[in-house]
Length: 95
Image 1 (tube, rainbow, N blue to C red):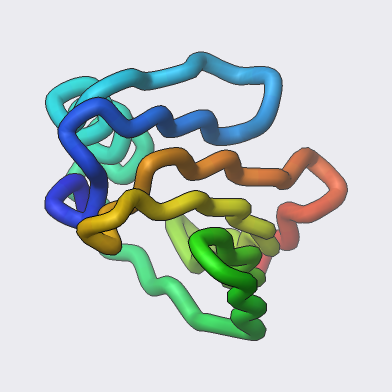
Image 2 (cartoon, rainbow, N blue to C red):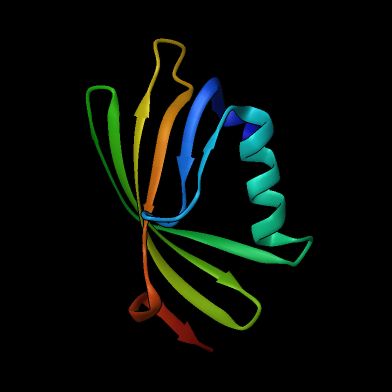
């Protein structure tokens, strides 16, 4: 996942949580979120306008489904410059 980000990218998941800057910090954030657990990500919708995108995904992890809206910007090399994830307790369903 971290390879999709620009070297100086910003990752905030969820909004209002910690802001991770740079590929190393983003890699650590993903590792701490997933912690080696099996997970799946299903694309629900994708909307692109210029160098920005909004993506609705459903993440299935540890017997839960989380509906997430990711808002991203991209740099000139098509790497993610910023990703902000919108979700909260009302978006989590126990399976």
